[in-house]
Structure formats: structure tokens, C-alpha cells
Image 1 (cartoon, rainbow, N blue to C red):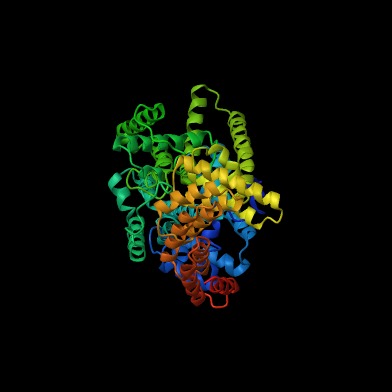
Image 2 (cartoon, rainbow, N blue to C red; image 1 turned 60 degrees about the vertical axis):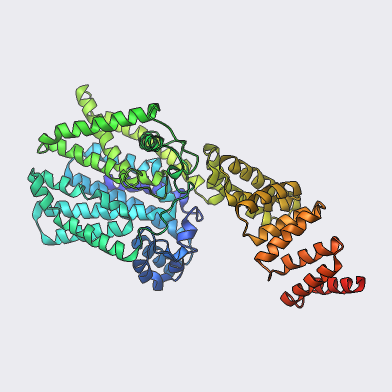
Length: 581
């Protein structure tokens, strides 16, 4: 069968992710689809994605990323299918399978590996577990589009290098623009064009000249990007965004960045464990005595020296092929490495989506060289090795997909591997809290609240965030643990003294434990912040009454009546107070 390689790739890619088709939204899916104003407008929101930044439809801020293509895709889906996670997951898997075939067809035309070796490399790529975050998470379709359009661009560019037809060059430019509009990562891939051109010209200067169109596309994209987004807005990251912004020595931060690079390559080779979040404090700061840091630095320096020494052989085809593979492996990591500038993430598995292609190709290239050296270069050995890796990776991928079913399954599955991650504990706590609020069985409600409280206590042990204290105090209140309420909300109101609701909740806790002076202070603070809240107003009036200050209680109750003139409890309190005076 002529097309059996492409069919086998589609079968592996689609088959391994078929178990995501009935999944719900997870992680950032709802933020970019369900809660995004532009996406919810359906077809009429398509234009808005082009005139605003990626997250504007959610937070009304033209800051950060500009990725209109995935936004447009989600708006079209909304127009066609409504809010349908099934449609979203199906399209993710479909585009992923298409991407794998496009890459195979393009790489086949380059003749960078023997045909059977290339097919094995692409089957390994299709099965690689590091892709689960991208394919099983609808929001990450921007990664798929970025590489898909880049592959189509390179396919056209290679044809242009061979036949010099203007139509192919135009296609290369347009597809590259679509790649850039899918995700900014494509900017880092621009050296791939002159690397490809070297295959035909063997001249660096000529290769750079032949890359004028892709360069012009990047300049056009940057002009568009800067006209829409404000690069400097919201660039102050919290440790929950990126743990590298925590206070530490420059040497420690630098060493940790190298450690993360080493961790990336470990995950490419042994993708376990896989987790959805690497924020504080999943990755502890290290120094240059760390073995992983030392190995990573030596590897990077060694690679740089090797490539510099090989530069004089840039006309050698094998050298060009290696450079291309290394380019795909290394270039996409440059903008997300935190070396050039700090980004909104410490580390993420989705950042390895494109590098995994380079590593799969390199692995098969080195494997072939090893077999040549051992005089064992036989197809059945290639297939034995390849199928073993595909089976192992495929089993891991299929199993990992189950965790991405929804937020609850993802958060619960990953907490085992995130013992020091404050955000992960808080995320799972919120799931249990939501379940407690909707539970009809009282015993089940208490169980959920207790689970949420334990998780937030663990989160606080990792990092003391204001919202953790607030949430813990509220949950303790639901459980009737008033000493816990006083401790948690007492700490929270010191950190955030302008939260009227929390002052009121703290006052209630003091009132229930008969500490009326403290209760009065809390209610007075809450009332000063929000005098139009009838619950705060009434609690303060009641506290004055309990303390025997009927005159002040009546005065306060009358203020409450002006806020809520039909509130029967307030009216009843006023009648009681009038009778006592």
C-alpha cells in the first residue's frame, strides 16, 4: 500500500488520543473558551481576536501574548457546535494527526534519514507522552497550529529552493505568518530557513539572502504584535507564575535555570512523572554544586564547542542534517528558558512539544550510526527498537490522557507528584470546596470541607498566600471550627485589612466564642469599609445590643433600616430596642 506510512502515523496519533474525545474542559480550557467574551460571540467574535491580545476576552487587558489563530478557531467552534468539549477534543486530535503526517511528508522530501528510520522517528513522535498536555488540553491547540503551519511553511520553502517557483515562496511566507499568529515560539525557529537553504547553496551568505521573505514576515508580525499588545503591562510575575522571581542570589537563580534545562531533556528521554504545573515550590532553587546543573552546563558547553568546530564543514550534508535536527531541539526552548527574559511560567511540558521532534530525529540518527559501527544496520533491528519505544510511550500516553478528563481528575492525579506545590494543593482544595457546597448529604459535605481544609493547610505550609488564609478561614467557618476561623482570618485581615467580608466573618467567629469586644472591633472595621452591607450593619447592631449598649444598638439598627428598609429582622430588633429604652 503506497500510503501505509502515513496511515500508520494517523492510526498511532489518533488511536492514542481517542480516549480524550469524551473528556470535559480542563485547566485553562474554560478561561479561553467558556469565560472568554470573544469566543462566546461565536462567528461575530472572530475579528476581535485579531485586534486584541490573547487573554483580552477574559481579563480585558491587551497585555502579553498575541495568538489570534487559536482564538478564531475556538470562535468558529462556538458558532458551529456551541460549548462542546467533545468537538474541541476531536479537533485537537485531528489536527495533531494531520501535523504528524505533514512533518513526515516534509522530512521525507529532505532525505535526512532512511525512509524506515524516519517513519519510526515520526511514530515515536506521535506516541511521545510529553505531548499529552498539548493534545489532551484543548487550549494548547496553539502549539499544534504553530508547528503545523511551520511544517507547511517549510514544505513550501523547500519546494521553492528546489524549483524557485514564486507561488511556493508566497506559500512559505503565508504559512509562516499563520505559525507566528498561532504562537510566538515560531519567531525562535527562523534560523531553520537558512539552515535549509544551506542544503542547496552551501553558502552562509546566500542562505541568509534566501531567508529574506521569512525575515520580512517576522518583522511584519512584530509590528502587528506591538500595535496590539503592551509588552510592559502586567509583567510583574508572582512566584505562582514563575518561581524564579523569588528572592535569591543571582547565582542560585542562574543555576536553577540550567537545572530546568537539564530537567527538560530528562523528560524528553524518560517522560515520568508528568504534571500540569511546575510553580512554587515544585522546583527548589539549586546552586552550581548540583550534579544535574554540572552535567547540563558541561553538555551545553560541549555542544557549542562541537558545533563551532564543525562550522567549517557547513557544506557537508550530514553536518547540515545534524544542525537542522539540533535546531528543532534547541531553538524552541530559547524564548521559554527564562534566560533571555522572565516569562509567566517556571517550566511546562508543552514547551517540549517542538523540541521533541528534534530529539526523535536525533535519536534515530544516532541509533543508525551506532548500528553502522556495530555492523548491525538491519531494518528488523530498527523496527524492533522503534516498536518497543512506541509501545512504551504509547502506553504511557494512553494512561496519562485519563488524568486530563477534567479538573478534578487532573488535580487529584498529579497531587501525588506535587508535594511541594502550593498552587496544586489550593487548586484541588477548591475542587473539594465546590463539591461540598453542592453536596446534599451532610456527612459528605463535611468530608469534602475537611479534605479542602487539609489541602489548604498544606498549601500554607509551602507558601503563605493571603487567599489561602481567607479560604481556610471560610472553610473552618463551614465546619464550625471557630478557633481555626479566628486564626486564619486574623492572619488574613492583617495582610489584607480592606476586606470587609472577612472582617465580618472574623467578627462572627469571635461572637460565637463569646469574645464580644473582639467581635465588636471586627464588625466596626467591616462597617467602616462597607456601610451599605446589611449583614455587616445588622451584626454590628446586634453586638452593641448584646453588650448592653441599647442606645448605640438602636442608632446602628436605624442605619441598617435605611440600607434595607424591608428587612424584618432589622425591624424586629428596632422594636425590641425601643421597648428596652
